[in-house]
Structures are given as C-alpha cells and as structure tokens.
Image 1 (tube, rainbow, N blue to C red):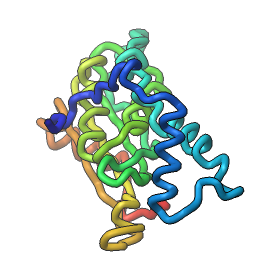
Image 2 (image 1 turned 120 degrees about the vertical axis):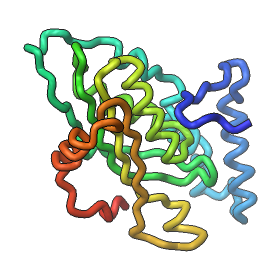
Image 3 (image 1 turned 180 degrees about the horizontal axis):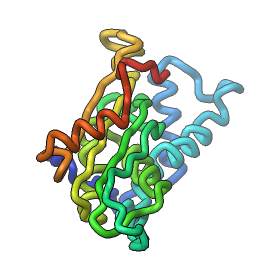
Length: 211
C-alpha cells in the first residue's frame, strides 16, 4: 500500500536486510542484465563500490530527524520574526527509477518560544533526502517534522529540484526544475507573512539548473 505523503518512511528491521554479499551479487546480476561481464577487470570491484555508495546515498533510513531537532534554545530575547535557511543543497533518489534528484531547499519557521540550531534544519533535509523519495513527500516530511517537534507559529518549506528520471531518460528534458512547497500555520493562513517570506527569498526565477 502506498505511504501517505508526510508519513516518515519506516526502514525494515535489520533482520530483514540482505547481507552485504547478497547486495553485491544483486549488482552483478544488474551488470549482466546491462550486457556486461562482472568478471571483467574493470568491473571486479564495482559491486563493492556500489554497496558502499548505497550506504551513503540511503543513510537517512538509519537516522532519526526528530532526535536531531530535540535540542532547542529558549534564550532568544523574545525574537518573533521569521527564521529562514535558504539554498540548502540536497541530493536524493527517485523511488520510481532510483536516479538522482538534485536541488535546493528553503526552510523557514516562525518561532513560538524556542529556536533550533540552523545546522539541524539542514540535517533534517538531508535525512529525509537520503531515502528513496518523491519530491512532494520529501517536502511534506521536512515541514511536518519541524512543525511537530518545534511547534512554531508556522513552517514553510520550498524545494526546487532537477530530476534525472526526466532529464536523462524518458522525455529527455534537461534544465527543467520542479518546485514544491508546504505551508503550515501562519505561512498558510496569513498572506502577509507568506509574502514576507517570498520577499526574503528574493528569487526572480526558480528555473535554475542543478546538474
């Protein structure tokens, strides 16, 4: 059954995970499927390299974004304006074709009483991006988690990304970017707050190449 947008992906238990050797053999099968010889000198180490790269590409399954946001600061001198971290580069993989999604995230929230270190916002983006994704769900997961943990007046997340499943295969349309957004709280309910955010972003065009 499809997972609802915004629901954190739940990794399978460690006991269900194939062994490293099984994963390497799966890579060899794909090499044969592509018409290659896995025993060729140049490909002998490829299965191990692919397995190691997958550990990096999909490390988000082993990390908890809620824990990352759990350490907050209350000494903010009654700061009650927008906090915006923009142009967070992220790299993800399309769950339909397992090819890269590369883009930038803009994350904003309006604190209620507490703030979080800005590096933690980037880490939340990274954790969810390092899972198999569709951009709509990735956007929702980032926004919903920040909203649930920090309980601010509002959260806004905007993602701009290029999808290689569209640029390197299928319709072959390089240079096309997809933009998604999730507005919660005052960013959704108050048009002035939303306009202030968009003014802070100051982006005359969203058609930016990411490759």
